[in-house]
Amino acid sequence: MNIFISGGCKNGKSMYAQKLAKEMADARGRALYYIATMIPTDEEDHKRIEKHIDDRCGWGFKTLEQGINICDLLKTNIDPQGAFLLDSVTALLSNEMFKSDGTCNLDAGRKVAAELSAFAKGTGNTVFVSDYIYSDAGIFDTYTEKYRESLAYVDRQLAQVCDQVIEVAYGHTYYYTFAN
Image 1 (tube, rainbow, N blue to C red):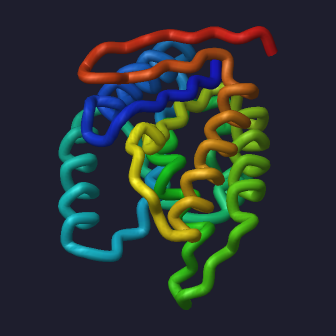
Image 2 (image 1 turned 180 degrees about the vertical axis):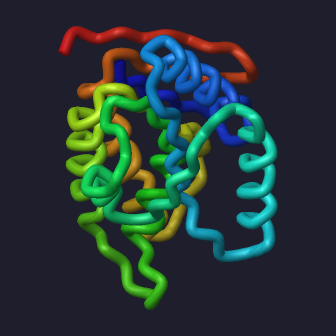
Image 3 (image 1 turned 45 degrees about the vertical axis):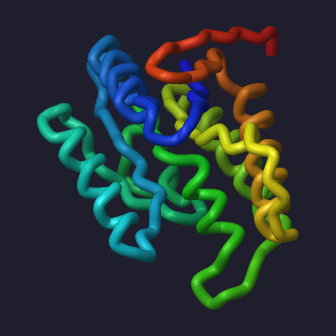
C-alpha cells in the first residue's frame, strides 16, 4: 500500500509515517527502509537530520540517502517488496530544482512527480511525506512561487498513485481515499 502524508512543518508527520512504515514491514516480514532526501546546507539542517536519526533509533530502519534521482534506488541491492518511508518530498524537490551550482531547474516538478510515481509503482509499499506550504498569503519571488507550484503538482500526482492520503494537522490525522 502506498500512502501519501502531508501537513504543516514539525507537527508529527514523520513520526506518524515511521509507525505506518514499520507496521507495513512487520505485517509482511520484509525489510524496512528510510529514504533520507535532505541534503544539508546549514546547521539547522544538520540538527533536523540528527533529530530524525534519533527518532528512528531502534526501529529497524535501514537508511538510504538519496537526495536526487530517486529511482536510482530501484537499481540498487534493496528489497523492492520491503516497506519504504521517503522523507521528504519537499526536500527532494528542492534538491532537484535548486542545484548546488546555483542554477534552477524550473521543470523539476514534472521530473520528481514522474520519478515518485514510478517509485510507488515499483515498490507498492511506500509512505511519502510532504509539507503543506500553501496556506500563507505572502507574496513570494518568482522562484519560490515556482517551487510552491511544483510541489503542489508533485503532491497531486502522488495522491493519484497512492492508495491512501493522510493529512496531519495539529497532531490530528485526517484520512482521504480516492478512486484511482
